[in-house]
Image (cartoon, rainbow, N blue to C red; front, side, top):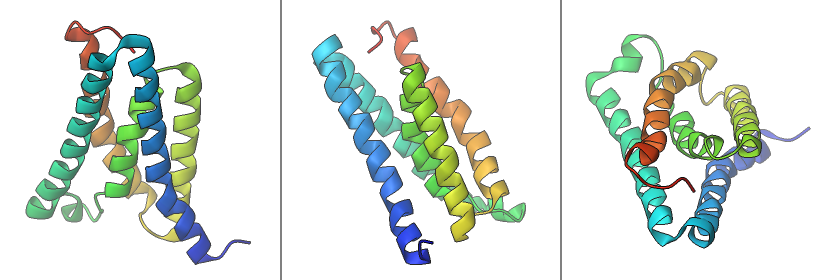
Length: 145
């Protein structure tokens, strides 16, 4: 069985790995759909990250999650930026990213980082905005990557 520290190391690798996968997808977008589309996607990813951290600061100021006895899970929110982005690109990426997120959430609970309710409440607030953000590219008249 892996130690707490080994599992902690694995958990720390998840967001960088899924982030790198998103950047690899953008490299492919450059080849297939052009640099402008890749830069647009990169801007949308950046907007997603700004939203996640903006929500974190709002929560710290207004104590929204603590007032409910919960904790805003920045780990969950940031991971969902990349998970949602990839999930909207193809069925294979959707299956991989959603399954990997479920394993990551399970690891966070097992390690004691967050409760199931912390993760679910964060995901319920964050995911719809990210889906809207990452599908808005089509409504802006850009071609899909």
